[in-house]
Image (cartoon, rainbow, N blue to C red; front, side, top):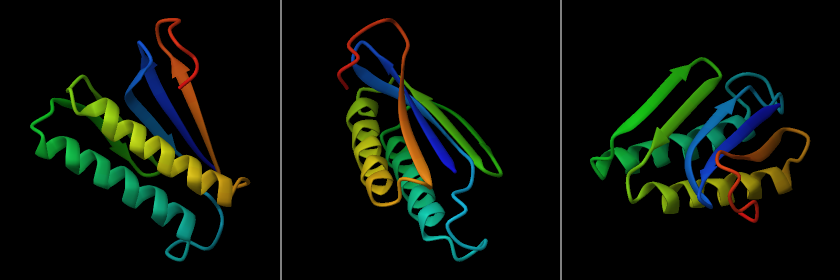
Length: 108
Protein backbone atom coordinates (compact mmCIF):
# COMPACT_ATOMS: atom_id res chain seq x y z
CA UNK A 1 0.00 0.00 0.00
CA UNK A 2 1.09 3.57 -0.71
CA UNK A 3 0.87 5.99 2.20
CA UNK A 4 0.86 9.73 1.55
CA UNK A 5 1.16 12.05 4.55
CA UNK A 6 0.84 15.81 4.05
CA UNK A 7 2.40 18.09 6.66
CA UNK A 8 0.04 20.98 7.41
CA UNK A 9 1.10 24.17 9.18
CA UNK A 10 -1.39 26.99 9.87
CA UNK A 11 -3.99 25.24 7.71
CA UNK A 12 -1.70 25.03 4.66
CA UNK A 13 0.27 22.05 3.35
CA UNK A 14 4.03 22.62 3.48
CA UNK A 15 5.35 19.16 2.64
CA UNK A 16 4.59 15.52 2.07
CA UNK A 17 5.96 12.04 2.52
CA UNK A 18 4.88 9.32 0.08
CA UNK A 19 6.09 5.79 0.74
CA UNK A 20 5.41 2.22 -0.29
CA UNK A 21 4.24 0.34 -3.33
CA UNK A 22 0.57 -0.19 -4.08
CA UNK A 23 0.72 -3.87 -5.00
CA UNK A 24 -2.02 -3.33 -7.60
CA UNK A 25 -0.02 -5.10 -10.33
CA UNK A 26 3.47 -6.48 -10.96
CA UNK A 27 6.41 -4.07 -11.00
CA UNK A 28 6.38 -2.04 -14.22
CA UNK A 29 2.65 -2.61 -14.79
CA UNK A 30 1.27 -0.95 -11.67
CA UNK A 31 -0.97 1.93 -12.77
CA UNK A 32 -1.57 3.13 -9.20
CA UNK A 33 2.17 3.49 -8.49
CA UNK A 34 2.65 5.13 -11.89
CA UNK A 35 -0.12 7.66 -11.28
CA UNK A 36 1.20 8.56 -7.83
CA UNK A 37 4.83 8.76 -8.96
CA UNK A 38 3.98 10.94 -11.92
CA UNK A 39 1.95 13.38 -9.82
CA UNK A 40 4.64 13.60 -7.12
CA UNK A 41 7.44 14.22 -9.63
CA UNK A 42 5.36 16.83 -11.49
CA UNK A 43 4.69 18.68 -8.23
CA UNK A 44 8.38 18.65 -7.27
CA UNK A 45 9.36 19.88 -10.75
CA UNK A 46 6.81 22.70 -10.64
CA UNK A 47 8.12 23.84 -7.27
CA UNK A 48 11.69 23.66 -8.55
CA UNK A 49 10.73 25.84 -11.54
CA UNK A 50 9.48 28.45 -9.05
CA UNK A 51 13.01 28.55 -7.61
CA UNK A 52 11.53 27.21 -4.41
CA UNK A 53 14.00 26.09 -1.79
CA UNK A 54 13.21 22.41 -1.39
CA UNK A 55 14.23 19.82 1.11
CA UNK A 56 13.71 16.55 -0.73
CA UNK A 57 14.53 12.92 0.02
CA UNK A 58 14.23 10.19 -2.59
CA UNK A 59 14.83 6.49 -2.19
CA UNK A 60 13.26 3.38 -3.65
CA UNK A 61 9.64 3.51 -2.58
CA UNK A 62 9.98 6.87 -0.78
CA UNK A 63 9.68 10.52 -1.77
CA UNK A 64 9.56 13.30 0.80
CA UNK A 65 9.52 17.03 0.14
CA UNK A 66 9.25 20.16 2.26
CA UNK A 67 9.09 23.78 1.08
CA UNK A 68 8.13 27.13 2.58
CA UNK A 69 7.87 28.79 -0.85
CA UNK A 70 4.71 30.86 -1.48
CA UNK A 71 3.68 28.52 -4.32
CA UNK A 72 3.99 25.38 -2.17
CA UNK A 73 0.57 25.41 -0.45
CA UNK A 74 -1.44 25.63 -3.67
CA UNK A 75 0.67 23.06 -5.52
CA UNK A 76 0.67 20.68 -2.56
CA UNK A 77 -3.07 21.14 -2.14
CA UNK A 78 -3.59 20.12 -5.77
CA UNK A 79 -1.34 17.09 -5.29
CA UNK A 80 -3.30 16.10 -2.21
CA UNK A 81 -6.62 16.41 -4.10
CA UNK A 82 -5.21 14.32 -6.94
CA UNK A 83 -3.96 11.59 -4.59
CA UNK A 84 -7.31 11.57 -2.77
CA UNK A 85 -9.04 11.05 -6.13
CA UNK A 86 -6.76 8.07 -6.75
CA UNK A 87 -7.55 6.82 -3.23
CA UNK A 88 -11.27 7.07 -3.96
CA UNK A 89 -10.84 4.91 -7.06
CA UNK A 90 -8.34 2.45 -5.51
CA UNK A 91 -8.98 2.57 -1.73
CA UNK A 92 -7.15 -0.66 -0.91
CA UNK A 93 -3.93 0.54 -2.58
CA UNK A 94 -3.37 4.11 -1.32
CA UNK A 95 -4.16 6.13 1.82
CA UNK A 96 -3.82 9.91 2.16
CA UNK A 97 -3.44 11.56 5.57
CA UNK A 98 -2.78 15.00 7.05
CA UNK A 99 -0.24 15.59 9.80
CA UNK A 100 -1.12 18.81 11.64
CA UNK A 101 2.17 20.33 12.79
CA UNK A 102 1.02 23.12 15.08
CA UNK A 103 -2.42 22.21 16.35
CA UNK A 104 -3.99 24.45 13.72
CA UNK A 105 -7.02 23.95 11.53
CA UNK A 106 -7.76 20.26 11.00
CA UNK A 107 -10.38 20.95 8.30
CA UNK A 108 -7.96 20.79 5.37
